Image 1 (cartoon, rainbow, N blue to C red):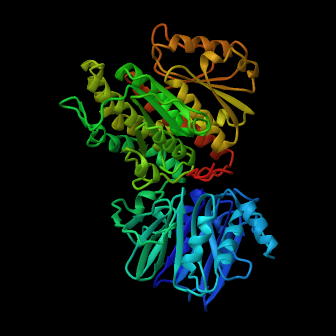
Image 2 (image 1 turned 90 degrees about the vertical axis):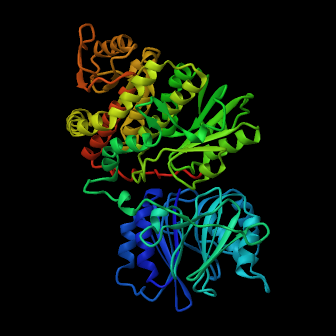
Image 3 (image 1 turned 120 degrees about the vertical axis):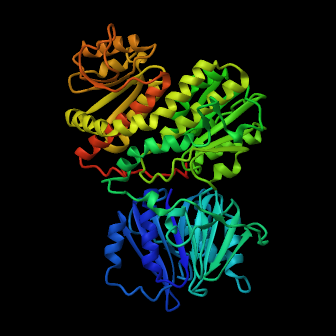
Length: 610
């Protein structure tokens, strides 16, 4: 959840680390800090709040002589987001400094042991306990590498760590267990970080660390060892092809707005190499080695869960595959029965979502094959799944996910088509309409985006002052309603509820009054008449209504409320036009209310802890 960068090389380290933290701030922004080695001493500077406050503290300090440093931007777990709890943490006797992403589950037991030895603590964090555990392991004759590994062998939980010592002023130690961490290999300089953009301006050569691995970097060398045995491990760098420009704002006010507008490109990139329009073929080579599953279990969290719900009817109708969709944090804590022939499909934008990773491991323990769907090459899910399909959406920086969802929807739709043809349950006319409609989507959406933004701004001005609201939909519009409510909550902090429209009269309609609007997602599909009835029930009770729908036709006119008209699209493809409208409404509402759109309070991009 937090962001880590460590550097040793030939450049001034602190400015470089600060630039890396700016590119990692999406991972957490409750507090931040840096530690650097200068004149064989550790210097730690920390600040509560966003990174700008740390920059202010560093202003005027002499830091240019240091060529080894590490930094951290925090999403609070143990301890409130205060300066005392900010990372890096020093050990009691000042011999070591550490930064940490994750949770040490047995920290209280270890802390009690250290307290009995006279160790004093200045924070509430599990991280300060861990750095003192490492210092406690530093017995005569042991190297720091051995002490580091010894402490980690006794630590239970998840961690990505970086460690500095003034006794080895040009060395950074790091380790990983169930939290993302990787190496950047440069010329006369090396890096460790939570994510590639932290060091991408300096190198494209990356080593992806596995769980249970520890690393030692100097300016001219890097070594990876097993935490359990300290045996050296063979690792090969991989070349990253995308550049940092893809992760910059490109003239947009916020990353979120940029990424909403990038959805036409993301959809096109998802289809690239997978759709042959002339031959009406879908190619997903990653799935060629296995039969279509007898059953499909989709497991995900948040927006990725909504993608799975959206795809469920396509898997059943086109591919004839019985499909269930589960929240990963619930799946992992019950005795789920996975049947022979079942495939677990885990979905995660980052490929590092802790609950989804845990579900993946449970499925594999039961002998169930796992297919991963994610956006990040080299991520934990990409490495641990039996098969993996990448969404190819490019980097997504804003905490609130946008283009990741549309790209997941594209790939899931293509999977349903692929399996449907493989099983001969999909007729050729449906395949033709789906592929031709999908191929036309990027151009159609590109031309539509400016008018969508204008209408979203108008609707937001009308409804952003409400005390709460419903998002309602039926069929494949129901997951979009869940996503709309999630986005409004994430960005504007307005309480919003996503409901299946048919469930509204089973209790929630009691909330409807003139100050409580309902946002209906009502395309002209087979369920439109039902949605229309639900809308009229709300309007009859003086509830304000926004209806996201298609151009009116005889018998399909809506009465009451405001209609937001979008072009017609074939079948499930209407969701790709309605999704950015929902996202832009949420964005504009949050902007009008003065909220931090890219970094909403209490949130972080990759949920790598429970």
